[in-house]
Image (tube, rainbow, N blue to C red; front, side, top):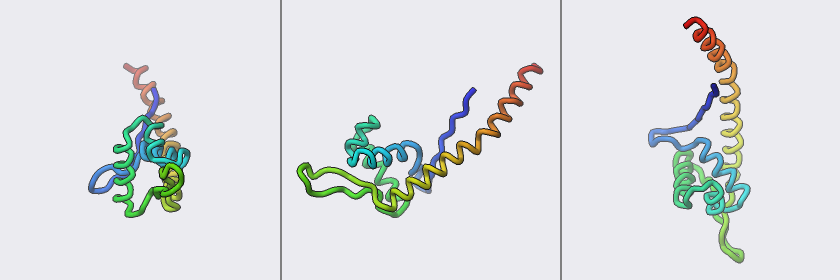
Length: 118
């Protein structure tokens, strides 16, 4: 048996931050492009754009800066706020998962005892 957890942040409009948005932001940092990040994750550009826009609306801060100029006139980078938010959210969700390990181990032990009695 394994434990799978999903941690989301939500407001009155619904979910705005979870593992998918985390992966998208990390990919934008790596690829330097919202379009390339979306392709890497196998989602449409419009879905990726919507995820970023939803996050920006929920937090009230700009998340990506679109790059203008250059040969291709494309690209995106995370804002300093977004980089800091990404770091604290990633740390938070990892700590939450670690905190669940001991209670899950106890659950498994209790479950094994229950199975032996039935």
